[in-house]
Length: 114
Image (cartoon, rainbow, N blue to C red):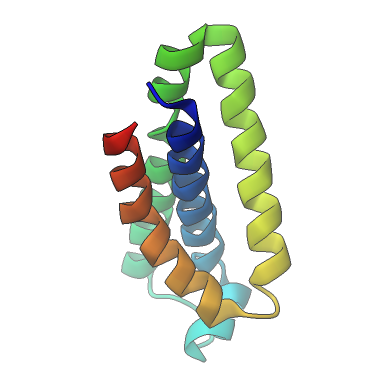
């Protein structure tokens, strides 16, 4: 398995997941849409999507590197994605949302190629 493509896929999924979780929050949702808060249905969908996108890369990481290194790598990519969202969302919320929408299928493609 190509580890570079796997790392790109994991980072893309984590970035999309962190973005989805942040957009479930009132402040960031308002930055993006102009509405004060998301509806309860939108909030649930964003939280579910974010959780799924963050949890999905655990198994490829563990399958590739084993439990110890795989979980450590996954936590590292979670941290990198959280920092990327934290640095981009306050200044470019629309760019961050578009990047997250593109990152999820790009991560799937990179994982398929890996």
